[in-house]
Image (cartoon, rainbow, N blue to C red):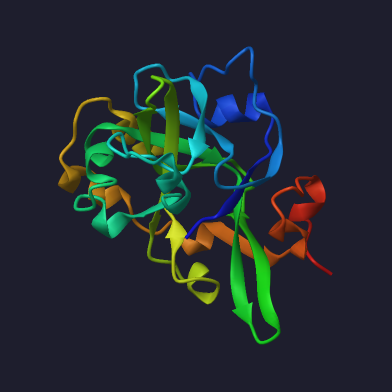
Length: 223
């Protein structure tokens, strides 16, 4: 799964990674070192705007009566997207990129769970494949939410966890953000493990276990 991640790059680096991206003047992205479920996350939705927006992490299907379902839908398994009622319509129509520059996973060790920080060796920002929804409350308020798609682990990640987030290569961004309705079979090939040779992982402080901790020290290798 993917339950925490980071987005620490400055706006210029973000626009270099996502050419043509418009950043919100009233809410520019600030460095985040411990993004957690239910919090606002930066997304680029396939709505034709190519604008960075902020959606709540934890997808609430449009038909849901209780928004609390979003707490259980922070991730979506790539293998079952086309079949699960919570995700199948969004897979066809509402896809998004979720910018990041690293993520955390907890490795099971003899002495307990060790938090690991995983990123690209280059240090460059990248994008998780995501889905989004617009949920309307009884008071006619609209809540925009998202989920991160996961897949089987690559050779680096399988030593840490049995799942990993789908990291899309830049040449797949346009296909994933196409606003037209897509048949699942045409997109499934994009949802595969990112090459392990391009990634690195190392242990970090257990301070990351608490979502309220959000500082650069969290991504410093543990001593």
